[in-house]
Image 1 (cartoon, helix red, strand yellow):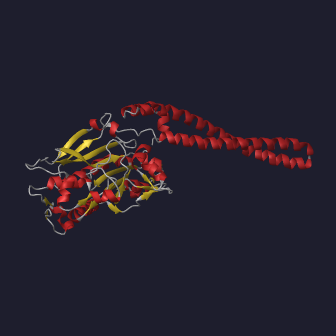
Image 2: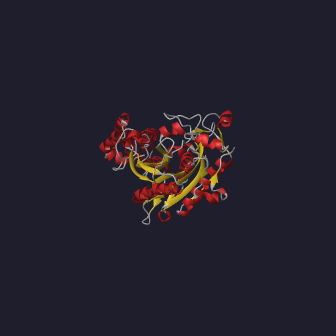
Image 3: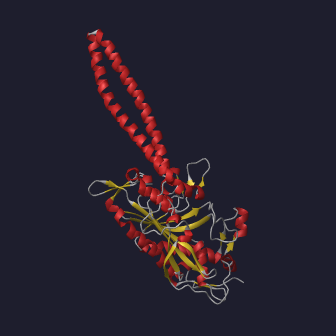
Length: 434
């Protein structure tokens, strides 16, 4: 959400940014919100004038009523002054109601106007215009056929999607045995990886209030992703970023505590409405998964430095698991409305001979802070809005697709990278079940 003062002073910049995001249907919102803002400021000014007049009139009424006790001829004048006070109070009540209504209308529109993207963001209408920046590790395609990922898991008796379908429907799964252990090993390794980078480990609430949802994501994303708890003001989180950033709602953060660097574990729940849909046989896009996340709350001048550091952590982690990856810069049309800049880390799939997304790193500027009324108190006593960033550490079982494909051997076994040995009880190779 942008600062209303910025929109008021820079309407053309805001409109040009909307055009860069290929959201021309939102262009009228700028003029609409400016008109509402002007009307609201006029109401505020009139209300302030009435409050000042009311104080003066109230004093006059008191004085005139006192005089009327001695001189009855003053009573009519006192009553006239009292009528003015009442009329002023009635008008003030109207204006205050109008201010409340206008403020709600302004906020509704401001929540729809996208954040100003960073000048470095490539311009394009959708993810087809995303730009590969660099690759890490050599993508290899072995000389043997690689089965579909659920077939690999099934060879270890490690997944049962039929049973999950009977119990919960499409988009769910049972992981079992070695595959379930591998799933948890990856999460534990990712947790310790981030702790060793100086991040504080957290386990957050898995349900959050509606005002927190509104604060951390756009309305469009909310409707496409979030599960609402019937009869409660609670939503299941789609990622722990939601509750981790929500932790700071309405808070004043001492500047000396910045940056706040947090890594959080949670299950994640997503409707996954949209073009991609839910696969019936795979675990690439599902309704429920687990994730280790990284969150940073920092000074505005430090956010781009943290953005660069965070996606590099993802690269380092995936390379330690012998998985080739690339960094893909997200174009303007592929950025969610709150994001200033974002990139995906994509893992190599030797079966498909292409890369697919496993991490998403985003700088949201001060948008979430403004929505959630997060503030930082500087050493000089002045308040300002911090910047917030988030990035996936790992999100199995999706990342297990890349892990299994890149570590699969010709005999169907899967090698375990050395960094995972302690988390797998010393197991170095997974052998298929007969």
